[in-house]
Length: 383
Ligand SMILES: C[S@@+](CC[C@H](N)C(=O)[O-])C[C@H]1O[C@@H](n2cnc3c(N)ncnc32)[C@H](O)[C@@H]1O
Image (tube, rainbow, N blue to C red; front, side, top):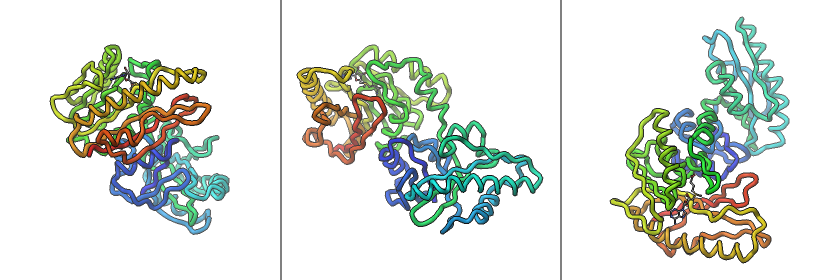
């Protein structure tokens, strides 16, 4: 059984794991962790997923806490051939937060017991700890724990304590590089965080090897970059703005210069409402135009006009886009949700999209601290 340590937007992380593994029945989905059976390896899964921080395998189970038994199990997982050992222990809540908190204290004693045993075998050993509740992906990666000894994980469910070994952690350097290191960043018109873009591409469920993906509001090309990294056969980007297209080109050239295969890429300047393609595509993944940047003190009349003009854009664009996809294709679209004194105001509605031929299958909220505009991710299928 595999354990997945989920990122901040849990619902989205779980939906992404479902889409990538094809598994919809979970052994558990509580607290910070998802547990399920899959044949895919930890590194394969982690390489693809953006909403998961760590992946590993469950190797044992204790019905009640027993430090010695746990040390026996973990001790047996440490490679006896390693000349020196560096390891760490993290405790995660999977349905019993109170017990997980208690076990965090116990895990220190457990770490010391394992350290004592390794030392007895005559090898130098280091127990890596952290001030945070659990060892972060950064701590695990920078200390090379997975190669030098291991990160061992106690997953505390309602019924028992599962003992697992981490197999892969999120490549925080690669994500940071794509987020902050790409040449063209347009904070004004709003950039999709690369992790959200990746989750959205995964949610499309399209098999990259045989699929063409379209982003008709491509901005600086974040979705296209993630689709290329996932191995899509062909990607198409378009945007109404020439500047956006220049940014996309600069970012895709930068990606090509990092090495790795680049598929055929088609780029054009066009409003989504009148976009023309030579062939229908297999998937649309996009963040729509969210309207002008807001500061939160706008006059209600301004907000009303803004909502009305966005509603017209979405109706016209998604009506036209319905004719550019193969029947049964999926569109994964980030629409804005505005917060006002009277509550939330959404612009894209299920009924409007369904009247245009899109069946809305899921809606998932993406939140990030300090944002005036939240995003609602619609997963919809062309009938
Ligand atoms: C929120 S941005 C997309 C950002 C993009 N996801 C990224 O990460 O760079 C929305 C984009 O929609 C474009 N846009 C606005 N109206 C449009 C229209 N009618 N058709 C196509 N693109 C449009 C804007 O130029 C802008 O680049």
